Structures are given as structure tokens and as C-alpha cells.
Figure: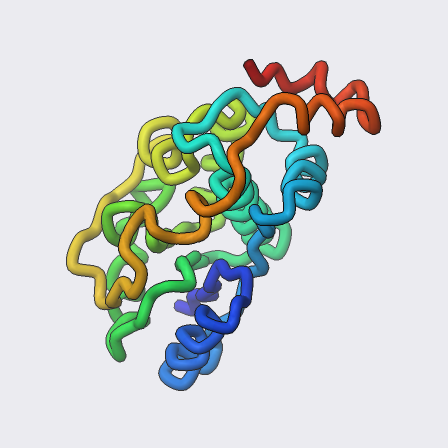
Length: 206
């Protein structure tokens, strides 16, 4: 069965080099454009567009928020484009030659789970279209209450955690862009509220 494999990326020079290495092995590999957490206005605008209820994050930065919304957008894309199976990867991974075969072997397990977590911190996810719908239902019911990978694990239904995924992590966990962006401060969101007053009432933040 065909699996659409996306790499979630800001397309920086460093990460494009990694993507190009993987693309040589897997020509069908595609980039899913990340929201830029370094751009505060873009991130807040995307939050507004998503209509997600923002409550809190474990790491209170715009990069963490951007990562959350990007993953939600990817699940939406899967559903809206009727993609039966999708794999969403971080952009700091070098994939082994047998990666796609490994994914194919996991597909039958998706009958029992909303998602399959590839490696510990959500470096990759494998979802069916049914699982993606279920994940979105959970997220929109409760809003943003944790970092996306923690929320997917604890608050979005059943998942299967798979170890020994055939890829190599180039950047250590929690050393990527998410924690390098600015912290979220209420005054910025209040300033945004002057442009969209009804938005702030829908999203109690602190």
C-alpha cells in the first residue's frame, strides 16, 4: 500500500541538505512546510486560522506553538486530501534504506491504533486517515494543553510506540528550533487582540 511520506521543515539550508540526502533514497519524499516559530506574527496568525483553543504548553515558546499547529495542519491535510496512510517526519533524520519497508510492515497495526509513534519524542508518526480524523477530534475538543508530542501521547487516543526505527537522529532531542524561539508573552497576544478582539475571548491563555 502506498504511504505518503512528508518531512516537516522550515527549509533552512542545513535541513535541506539532510532532505536531499533522503530524497536520493526515497524520490517520493515531500516537504510539509512548517510554520515559522521565529516569526511571531505568522505563528499567531496561524493559531487564529486554526481555531484551536490555546490554554498552555509545556515549553512556552512560539516555536513549540508553531510545531503544534504544523502537525495539526498535516493531519488536516491527510484528511482533506483523502490520504489513506501518511508518515510525518522531523527534518533532522537520516533514513535507512529499509525505512519504507519498515513502515509497510507497521500498517496492519493501524487497525488498532490512531497513530504509530516512531521513536521516543515524536520524530515521526504513521497515521491512517481514520486515525488522523480521531486525533483531530481529540485536539479540537480539548484545545492546546501540552507540547504536541506529549498531547498526542496522552490525550489523543490510542498510540503504538515503536523503538529501533531505521533512521538516525542528527540533532539531539530538545535542541532544535522550538526552544530557540522567543517565549510567549501575554502582551503580544493582547496586541494581536486589538486586530481580532473576538479571537482573544475564545482563547483564555493565563
